[in-house]
Amino acid sequence: MGRVSDKPGGAAVVRSLAFYAVFYLGTVVFVLWSLIMLAVLPREFARVVAQWSGFHRFCVTRLLGIRVIVEGGPQQAPALYALKHESFFEAIDLPHLLPHPVPFAKAELLRLPFWGWAARSYGVIPVARDEGAKALRAMVAAARTHANGRPLAIFPEGTRVPHGQRPALQSGFAGLYKLLGLPVVPVAVASGLVYHRWWKGAGTIAIRFGEAIPAGLPREVVESRVHAAINALNGRPE
Image (cartoon, helix red, strand yellow):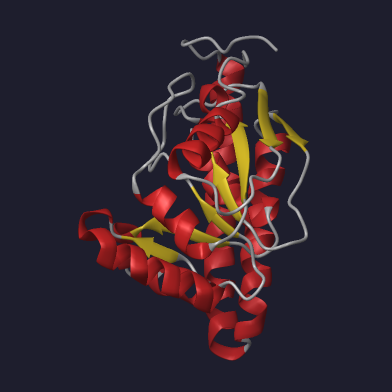
């Protein structure tokens, strides 16, 4: 895979403009449709979200010319999925990658008009980092309420990270792992070099599901294993 240049060519600009026009206009349609579903057929709302996520994957591969490679896949048993976060790609792709997931997201996002209401209806769980143990207990209670067999998904480093960087996991991850009592499936993602830029370059986004890490391990052990696994693609050139 060739490394993406910092200076985009004309083809990258044209592809990106086409992507923005098609994806965001399509997103408006999906948002309106999802609001209708929430009002009249709420059980169909999750299907619309998954279709929107699949539409995004289609636009990424067909309009941007980005190849998406997924190694492995989700397991059948309930689990907490810990994903590397390098760009908005994996956040939007999540309902396509996992079957009807329950994501953990920054609490600020759920305060946005309309989006916050829709996100809560879907089952998104707010992460209030400055509230300590109180927030952690609320997250666990919400996860048990919404999960009902659905996979839980979190970005344990807390925010988007440039490709190649390996920050420590957020302190709340280990507490969540302990209280939920679920195995963790680490998911390595290499998307930043091609997607996390205004003019998106052609290349490859790689996603790798790691082996499930059992519940009940000491904090330092689970953090070390998850950290290593989600960064497994960090040295891979794009």
